[in-house]
Image: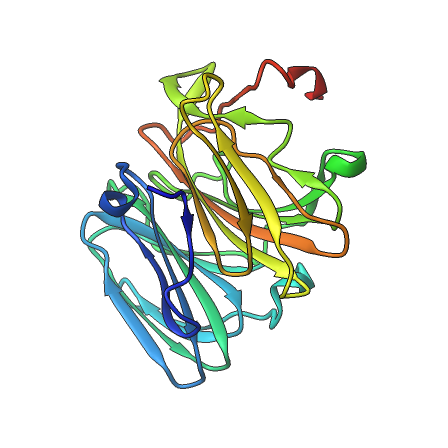
Length: 264
């Protein structure tokens, strides 16, 4: 089964990735591209969700509350902090597009441990990570330092043209805390200019898994295990939205021994 998921279309429900489809246990991911006036809704059941307004604006009702219009940036490459909403399990939600918008729905098992709440734009600051051609910029939406979810870890990454990201190569595919945690992961990619492409490799040290993919805007890459670096060619900057979840809401990873010398 390929780890590269191409969009289902250019509008409406563009991605619909459930754990059973991905061949894993925890992470689900949906992506909608909506025109003004279009609406979508969902019932979460046993899952919690983080709605991420990737682009555009939408009026959101969720968990019995009218959250008003969420969203501010009209182009993801503005790099401004996103408007997001956490919704606990066993709740419903609805979004009505106010402008053309791209809405991501990040899913993982919920435990009724957190209340619905806004996440961002307040409290999200674009932060540099790495140096040289490994420099990239992070909008942390819901990482482990913020106790805002039961299972989900969600972040945005902007990689300048000609740079590498999720690099040096690392993996988080064993439940052996505190050295390493088991986290499934999805990458939702965008390129700027839009006709560009990036490269992502997913591989294990023993070579049992080794897949290298050319990714384009609106592609999703599944990372069930192994290392997963990606690169942006000259002339094209890369964005990705990461969704991670596993049995423990901690992000601990180990480097590929061949490249560990590059770790800061």
